[in-house]
Amino acid sequence: GNYGGRMGIRLNAADTIIFLDIHRTICVYRAFKRIVKYRNKTRPDMGAGCEERFDLQFFKWIWEYPNAKRPTILKGLEQLPEEKKVIVLKSPN
Image 1 (tube, rainbow, N blue to C red):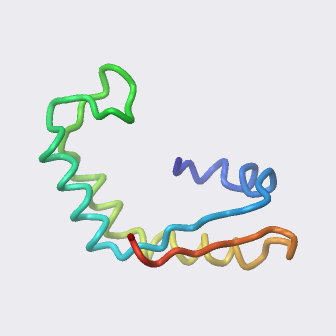
Image 2: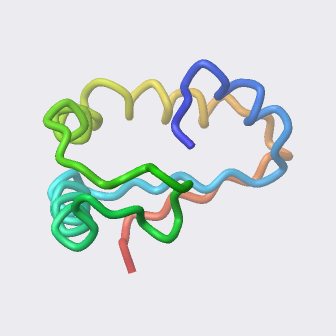
C-alpha cells in the first residue's frame, strides 16, 4: 500500500524493503492501460464493488510523485539501520 502515515511502522517491522523506483511515464501508461482494460469493472486484485474508474487526481499524484514524495522516501531508506535489506528496483520488468 501507499499509506505514508504508516510508513515508519511498516519499515520498522520489515527486515527487507523493496522500493519500486519506476519512471513516472511508465506508471502513467500502466494506470491508463488498467483503466482501459477494467473500466467500470472490478479488477481481480480489488475487493467486490471497487470498480475501476478514471481519477484525474490519481494521475496528478503519479506525475508529481518523483518530486513530491520520492526524495523523502529515499532519505528515509538511507537512514534505516544496516541490518535492514533495502532493494531498489528501477526496471519494470
